[in-house]
Image (cartoon, rainbow, N blue to C red; front, side, top):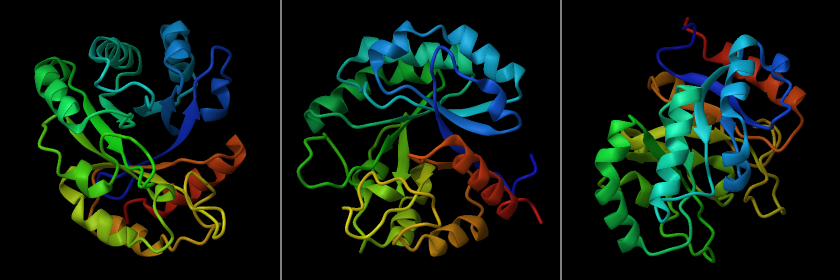
Length: 243
């Protein structure tokens, strides 16, 4: 690996049955499917083979709309991800539900998740009105479970949030940083703009990840065209190359 230390740089790619894998040659991607019904209808063997044949490396998976409240369906999805995409790092969204029930279900299914060698990297959502069973980065990063970690999304925090402090505090459980920016006046939630094109000051966090040998993944999580993702992937990969 030609990155600085152990950090991996990638970007988000939504999987479809007719995906043009050729544009991802030589890249790292976080593959993802938002709709569970669509996920289970896709031919994952075919899609994974297309990506591999074009030299695209799936380093993690974004599987947001299934949570531990549907354990059998979640486990079936994790088995598919593990079998075809060969990754055990899965970004997942905390869905609406009870914190206590989620804790109990995680504990009950810990052995099965560990058998798959999977980490559920829960993503932060810090909007006060949501009904997710957990949402803040500090709650996720202190979850006492051996099968959970944190995906820290920089677009899911208020403009006045100390992102650097969040990342420092979450370091032991931080697995993935979803990197994107937001523009003041647009709510700063789920804007997912290119990381250099918004109101969030992300530079201190990036410097910290570089100089403190972050051993996880930085995923460009953009709502843009693929060309923009590829541009910033190369830019960030070059920045994090080993000296």
